[in-house]
Length: 78
Image (cartoon, rainbow, N blue to C red; front, side, top):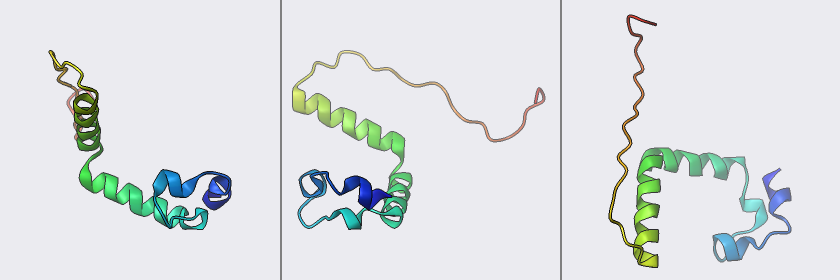
C-alpha cells in the first residue's frame, strides 16, 4: 500500500537522497513509530515548537502548561 501511494510523490525531495517509494513500507512505518515512542511524542512537539519559534523569530511572551494526565489505575468512583 505505502509504496503504491508514494509512487508518484517526490520521495527523494521529501525524505532524502536515495529514498525510493519501495523503501516506504509497513516495516519502515513500524520502525518510525517505535522511534517516536522512544523519543516521546510530547518531546517531539515541544522540540518542533521551539525550533519554529526560533526560526521565525516569533515573540514568546506566555506559555501554556498542560495540566491533564493519565491515571492508569481504577479509582473509588470507577
